[in-house]
Length: 124
Image (tube, rainbow, N blue to C red; front, side):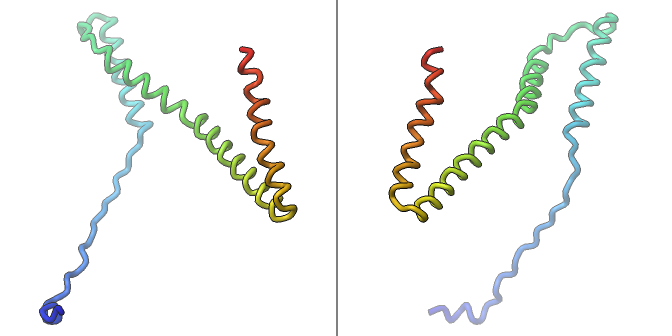
């Protein structure tokens, strides 16, 4: 039994101080692009020797391409999830309405669908 805890002060909650900062990735990307173009122009004019910093430019271009390609992949994943959810919900409704016959019929559709989908894949 904790008799001592009756006489001690209970700990207070700790306050959290959050100061949000504004971050604009497009502005940062634009500044990097301007700096890169400025360096290229200086190199072409002969003002600055080439520094051979190709590695950072290549890495940056791969990252930029990956950022641009993400939305298409995300929409396909969302559509696939929606289709699976719709199929499962319709199958459940059919099972409640017609019983095991609908369950077996719905599950028979899955191999048929997979066969039709991969039929052309085997030829190619």
